[in-house]
Image 1 (cartoon, rainbow, N blue to C red):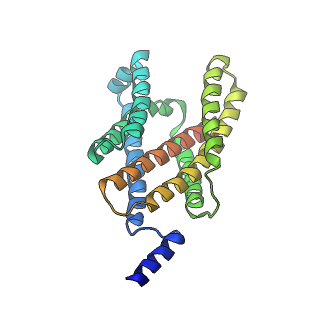
Image 2: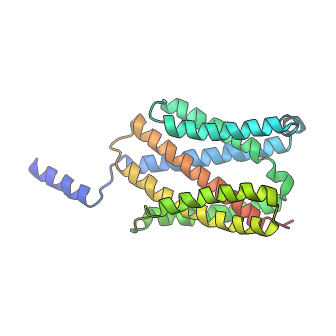
Image 3: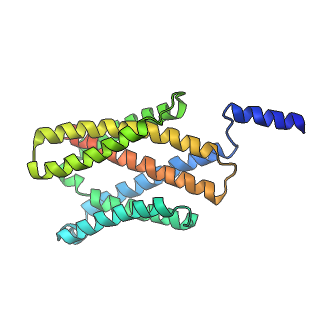
Length: 238
C-alpha cells in the first residue's frame, strides 16, 4: 500500500492526469463541434428563408432582442453552471448556438459563399494550430489572460466608437487586432481547460459541466476568430 501511495504521489507531482481526462477533453471538442454545426445550419436556414428573414430583420426590435438574449444566455450559463443540471446547461448551450446562428445569417448577404468558405477553413486551420500549441506547450500562458481580456474590452469600445466614425481604415485595423486577440485566446483557453479537466477525478456531472463550459469558451473563440478573419479577408472576394 505504501508503494502505491508513493507511486500516486510521484504521478501527481509530475502532473499526472486522471483516466477521465481524455474522455472529458473529447467531450469539449464534441460539444464545440456540435454547437458550430448547429450555428452554421441555422445561419444558412435563416438566410434562405424569406419568412424567417422578415421576422428577424423586419424590425430593429427583433434583432436587438436576439443579441440581448445571446449575451444573457452566455452570462447565465457561466454564472449558474454549478447550480444548473448537465441537461439544462446543454440545452441552454444548444439554444445559444441556434440564436447565434440566426444573428449570423446576415453574413450571407455581406460576403460571398466563396469568401465565407475560404475564411472558415482559414479559421479552422488557425484555431487548430493554436489549440495544439495551448495543449502541448510547457510555457505558462496564464499571464496572457489579463492582456487578452483587456484586448477584448478595448475592441468592444473601439467598435462602438467606429459605428459612429464609420472609418474603413479603423475597421481594418480593428479586424487585425481582433484576429490576434482571439488567436491568443484560443491557446490560452485551451491550456486553461486542460488544467481544469486534469484535476477532475471521474466522469461525474460536475466534471462534465466543466467540459461544457470549456466547449462554450472555445466555441466563442472560434466564432469571433471567424468573424474577424471574415472582416479582414472577406472584403472584395467573389
